[in-house]
Amino acid sequence: MIGEIDDAIRALVRRSEGIAADIEVALDAPTKEWAARRNAPTVDLFLYDIREDMRRREHGFTEVRDEHGVVTNRVPAPRFFKLSYLVTAWTQRPDDEHRLLDALLRCFLQYDAVPDSFVVDTLAETGLPCSINVALPPPEDRAFADVWSSLGGELKPSLDVVITAPMTRGISYPVGPPVDRVETRLSAASLGVTDEVRNLPRVGPDRARPRR
Image 1 (cartoon, rainbow, N blue to C red):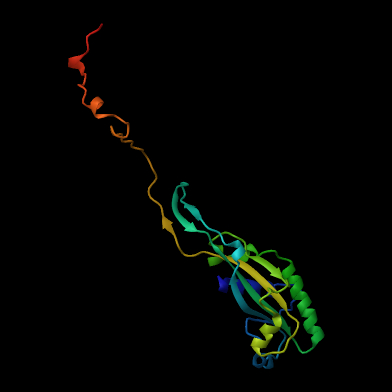
Image 2 (cartoon, rainbow, N blue to C red; image 1 turned 45 degrees about the horizontal axis):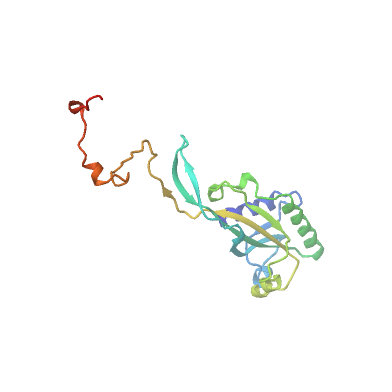
């Protein structure tokens, strides 16, 4: 799932009209050492946080049917995970970085979800969209200054891009064969028949009661 999201977000940047073809697109941590080695304009998409979206956790099962519409398996509901990317632009001049960030912002604002052409492999298992949010306020337990501090770099303008993707749990429960008949068994006790009634002589064809 994470690899497919990496490929999707990188492809969105590369095919954006405002991003030149010669600009590199990286997935590296923007540390001081990494920044010192940059000798070409670069867009960096650093995945810095992965956490489950607990508000979307569901319980229950989804039915899997065969070509005849018969239920064959039941699978647990997927879990949704939020992948947060620190998106930065690296050039020689701050104004060029700002223009590049503007193009990146316009790029991500075009999409509410990852386009269907990028929903492949594990992303396609659930048939659910992968939503895209950009430049939202950070959670209360996380600040961008803390992210930069942990990287050992200096704070610079960036975009926070969060993609929420569903992920199957890899569990499947097979169901039994379909019911084709129902048998009902009754006992004297279940019908409330007493011993006195049960011990009465039976009347058969050879012991028919005389007419009155």
